[in-house]
Length: 238
Image (cartoon, rainbow, N blue to C red; front, side):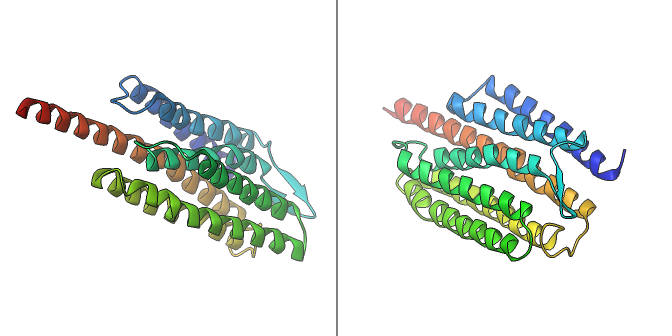
């Protein structure tokens, strides 16, 4: 087994552990809606399956000497919109869900991931054209989660707005890593080799998927617990 396959198998195991942990967490939801746990469980499950294909030397194709891991894009095409949905649900935790806004950010994400796949399958200058389209979509996503999403939290109490801000910073830092890793890797300028590229695309997804869901669910659980305690205190004072 080569080092890239070993990294992929390690990722599969990590995703399985993450999914199992969220299953256990869902047994005692503590006021957090069930669908939040379903999404958190599905994300590492799907991602782990996609990476298992790569560990088995599947989910990749070589075009003009350039290796494209299309299984990554199959993973991202499903999981990244769900991550944005989870972030949106947190931003709109106690208010009506803004479905057009959620659809806009998830749809833009599909454009971003699809553009990245086309870029990876392209040659010459068109590769960077499609990469640029993906980067524009990325900027639109950032503007939505830092703008309208963040505004939604401001009328729902300091605890929720603080939680969202922490998640947003964590989310943004990790997601910025993806286009950087792509452009410096074999798909872009080739500053790093395929092994380092594989390592980066195991570390970034783990923390952006399992890490984010861990922080999101525990933050929401603590928030609901705190509000329940405050409600009990208020009733006791009456």
